[in-house]
Structure formats: C-alpha cells, structure tokens
Length: 295
Image (cartoon, rainbow, N blue to C red; front, side, top):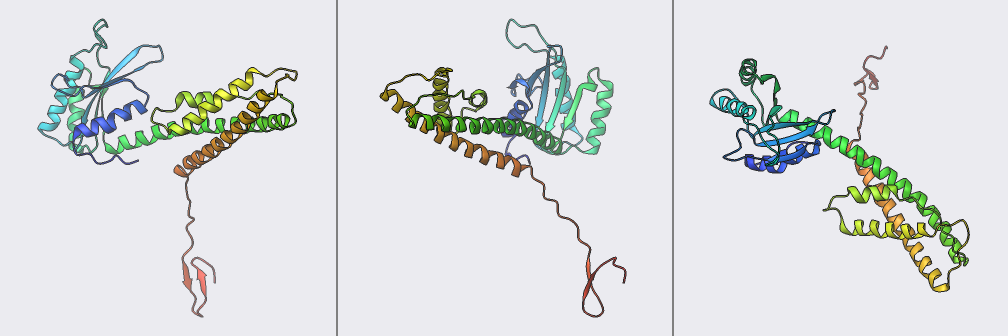
C-alpha cells in the first residue's frame, strides 16, 4: 500500500515509521528525535539467533535526497550514530549501534547514491549503512502486512472450524436438554482463547464481549463433562437450556464474522487475470476473423 502524504517529518515518523518498525517485529522501537538524538531519529532492536540483542538506528527524511550539503549532513548524523553508544536503562551496559538505516518517503538520486557509496567505502562501519527510499519502504510494508494478514487468516480459519464443531456439539446437547437429559459434550476452546489474547484493545467491544461470554459458558460446560448422566433439578436444567441456546446463537454469529473477515482477506489479495484476445479484423465480405487466422 502506498505511503500516505504527510505535512512534516514528525508526522511521517510518528504515524508511519514507528508503526512500520513495530509491524516488522522489532522491539524497543523508540522515537528519539530531538536535540540530544546524536544522529538517531529512532532506535530499535531484535534478538539474533544466539539470543543476543542487536540495536539499530534510523534517520528519517520526508523528501527526496540529492547531493550537496543535505547529503553531507545525513552522513555526519550516520557517523554520530556509530560513535555515540546507548543504554537501555541506567544499570545496563553501553551498546554500540550495529547498523544505521536512512529512510525517506521520497527518492534518492543516482548522484547521491554514488556520493553515499564513496563515503561508506572510507568509513569503518560503512558497510552497515543502508538507504531505503519510498518505493522500498512501501514494498517492505506491503510484505509485512501480507505476513500479518496470513497469520490472522490462519487463526480465523482455525476459530471458524472450532466454532462450527462446537455448535454441532451444542445442538446435540440442546436436544438432550429438551428431552429432559443433561449430558454435556467437550467443546474446544484453544482457538477462541488465542483470538481473545491477540485481539487489540481497540477492537470491536461488543464482539469481544460476546467471545468472552461464550468462552466462560463453554468453560462451565466443560467442568460438567463426565461419562455418565448427571442428575440436576429443573431450575438448573432451565439455566442450561438458556445458556446452550445462547451459546449456539453466539457461535453462529461468530462464524458469520469469521466468514466475512476471511472474505476480506481473500478479496485483498485476489488476482484477476484477463486473457489477451486476438485482434479481430473485418473480412472483405463483411464478416470478421481473428488476426493470424489462415484464410
């Protein structure tokens, strides 16, 4: 998806670069732009395969990067990134920046790239300097969004399958309750639990409340799952009938929600391939024929 237009670099940093770095999975994403930034608009980190922390820095620009004083200023800031260590907190050891990324919404001219490349060849940490223009940032953001969407799609598919299976069990349970027997079935809750843990705080509140209500009710039913029929009084049976009916309805509504969300994912990444037809030309007698056809 295209990067939106921003009036200032501050807007670009706050509204796009910060969330973008978090989406990529980096930790400790911190906006440090200011008088004491020491060349770092952002720093962020990740764990390598051995469990060690690697810290990176970013310089953020909104417009195009060309040659001249602007490029020299950027490279001076990059150099300061490597020279000035940072601490995560007061008692932590000082740590050097592993790589510096210069990110811009605009473009980087060919001349600027040559100037940057020449500078990097003369610097000790030059091989760890990377420039990302607007097109590269858009591509990486699109790929990160795709990976996130695929994970959400797998989770929603699992939730839908779980809800569908539980609904079948609940309908059989309801049939038994209407016949005067109380016999509970073991409903699955793993996918529902996973969705509730991963849903963001700004998600649809009624939807979350419905999921949580269903989770509590099915957990209660699970506590009564035994190999024999349990004897309950009529008041308890009425409660179970109402709760089972409500759980069936909530499950159906959530299945509809999953179907709608899955359709959105599929539409977002659907491809429409239009075959290229042969050009149709008129024949001398007024009829038409496809070009390339042997007369």
